[in-house]
Each structure stands twice: as structure tokens, then as C-alpha cells.
Amino acid sequence: MEIKTYLTDQRQVVENALHSFALAAEGPFSRHIEAMRYSLFVGGKRIRPILCLAAGAAIRDNEETRNNLLPVACALECIHTYSLIHDDLPAMDDDALRRGKPTNHMLFGEAGAILAGDSLLTWAFDLLTDPAYGSLSVGQRLAITHIIARASGPLGMVGGQSLDIACENREFPFETLQTIHRCKTGSLITCAVQAGAIGAGATETQTGALIHYGNLIGLAFQIVDDLLNATSNTAELGKAAGSDLAHGKATYPAYFGIEGTREKALEAIEGAKAALTGFDAKAEPLRALADYIYTRTC
Ligand code: GRG
Image (cartoon, rainbow, N blue to C red; front, side):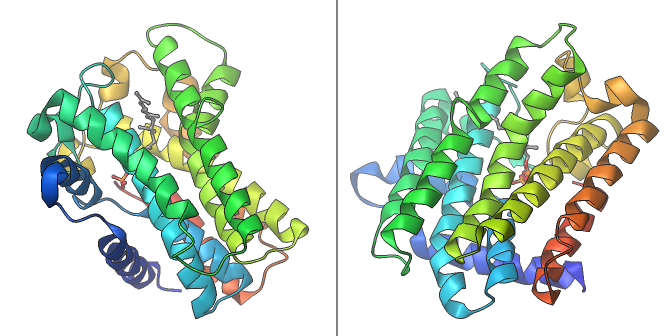
């Protein structure tokens, strides 16, 4: 399948859905909502929502499934966007550029950026639990909300971020790096795939295979991120290249060198595709997305 066309189409689907759900920047909170909207619509690959929709389509490729998963997909993008806003803050990575544009705090100030992130996170759960959207059963909605909360919080993304910060400028075992990658980046990617499976009514076996796929592409995604940070440039990435070295972060290239790291990423991608062996042609986008994650340049 032609991944470029697929990604362009799917990005448009996600973009339209985000616009349809997003709060309008008006009324007494207009400046705050403007700050939320700025980062939500400033660009981005929309990989997590696309993975969620693709996982659902691998099980049931129909309009009802798509409509049920769109609020979930958008909620995932809101959580991802909040994490980037907070990650860029002076107290964290202190970055001025994200997606090729000024970071949120450069435009809305530190307090404004913290609050924009807070509201994107909270609003994601509003979207997930609003019965006005889609026709998921209460059980499906609860299961999806739970895995997303788990993946985003202290045992997932935020936990991984705090471990990452605690390990800056320190030597630590490779297992710790794996934990950081699995939690900081992998958990939200895996849960995007798992949420798609649950929303589409996957069997336990299908969900298990998709979680395995998600774990491996999540790992590959962060390995490739490490590689790009070490080998690409700021113009191509739209964010600061070389920042891992500057922040004294241990990364895959630090352990395995550039070529060794590429091999590790490829190994994870091959494993992810192997996890889809029992799936038919409806899983073709998931296979192509795995390849894309390995070959992406930003
Ligand atoms: C709660 C204070 C507080 C902070 C939270 C959790 C957190 C801050 C940050 C961790 C999130 C993080 C930056 C993970 C790294 C994951 C990663 C590789 C992000 C880039 O994702 P892409 O490439 O970005 O999908 P685009 O711009 O395409 O959306």
C-alpha cells in the first residue's frame, strides 16, 4: 500500500475530527483555549490517533467503528500534545521550537503553557467519557478510559518522564533505558493500538497480538527518535537536534552506536509485523505504519 497517500488521508480525517471536537476560543476563557488550540493545531504527524484508527480497522473496517474511535483518537492526540507542551517548558527540556514553530510557553508564557497542557489532559477524559460521542458500550468506554489513564500517568508516560529526568547525567543500566522508553513513549503508543482493538470489539487473542505489535512499534519509535536526535538537524526535525547529548541523556546510540541502533529498530519493526501474522489484509495499514516508523525522517 502507498503509505504516503494513506498518511495524508488519515491525517486529514484526524484534523477534521479535532476541529469538530475542539472548544472554540471564545468567551471568558478565550486566551486559555487559544493556547490549547495553538499546540493542538500547530502540526504533528498524528501517529497515535492514526494507529488507533488503523488498529480498529484491522478488526472491523466500517463507518461505525471509525466514528466510535474518532473521539478516542482525538483524546490520545490531546494527551500527546499536553506532554509535548510540558516537556518543552524551562523546567524540563527548555525548548523554544517544536514542530518547526515556537513552543507554547514562548507565546503564552510559562503559566499559560502549564495550564494549556493541564486542560488538554483533562479535556481528553471529557472526550473519552462523553456519551454524546459514538455508540461504544459503557464497558468499552470504561476499559478504554482506564488503559489510557494508566498509560499516561505514574506507571506510564509521566513515570517514564520522571525516571528520564532522574537519570540525566548519570550512568545507569540498559534495563533502565528500556523502562524509560517503554513508559515515556511506548505506553501511549501501545494504548492507542489497544484502545482501537477494544473499540472495534476485538477478541482477547486479537487484542493480545495488537498489544504485542504496539509494544514493539512503540520501542522502535523511541529508538528512531534517539537516532534522529543524534543524526538529523533542527530544520528537518522541527525541534532541537542534538539535545539528548546536551542534556546528558543515555540513548540507544550511546549503547549500540548508530548502525547497531538501526539494527535494533529494524528488529523491533520485524517483530511488530510478525505479531500481525494472524491478521488479514485489513491489517495492511498497520504493517505499513510499522515500516514508516522505521523510515521516518522527522
Ligand atoms: C506532567 C509536568 C508534567 C510533564 C509531563 C510526560 C511528559 C511531560 C513528557 C513525556 C512525553 C515525551 C516528550 C515523550 C517523548 C515522546 C516523543 C518521541 C514525542 C514526539 O512525538 P512525535 O514525533 O511528535 O509523534 P509530533 O510532533 O509528530 O506529534
